[in-house]
Image (cartoon, rainbow, N blue to C red):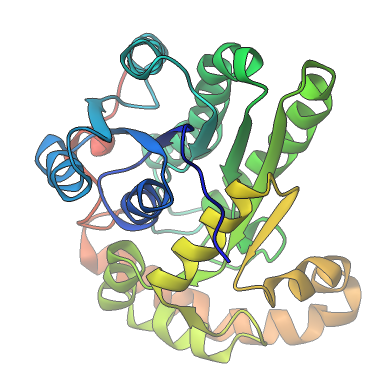
Length: 296
């Protein structure tokens, strides 16, 4: 049974599409008022229109810009009178191995996926202290399943996991809860785009061990994330079987599997690098333009 969130106010980053937009709609369906933050005004406005302007509002905000993000969070708190729940959801990826990826592409992913989570928590916690609220950080199964060609995504999501648990300790005495969410592959624009862009990536995904070789539909992901927020979960696994990847994370990086990993990667990495070079870009076409821009 879904939790009744009537009287609660939730703030969601990366709310224009995918998981963020879906969770915003679901939290509103459960009674919450929702503040949507993101980079695509037209898409944000569509989500608000779906929910209803009496229950939702949007602000254009880039998690890479601390001042802009803080102003948006504060404006949302003023608009709704409070913030009870925060979903630090904004995230991107980039194509290319460590030796191949450009500095600016690496830095952009880390700035969104890790620094953006810090900025969201930093701006949101003062409001959560007032309400005894809860924040959920969207990390990934990738935090504990490193994969050749996804080094920047793995690193940023592992950092987000560590950040969430350190922050959880820091604010517990203030009555604020912090949890971390680990989605596997979710049927979103970015995952579909990566498979279309890089055939080798699609083939690698099929050969990964269970449960990392499956794709979860967006509706299931939205339900599990929303359930986790409602019960102030310590961890949220999407799908639930991802917990087994966490339990076996030491095995995945142990020397025991090195011969297998080296053999497989030796065949697939060169082909993936050639595909990235031929593509001529390091990002999904679904990443908003303002997140593609390098800021100096």
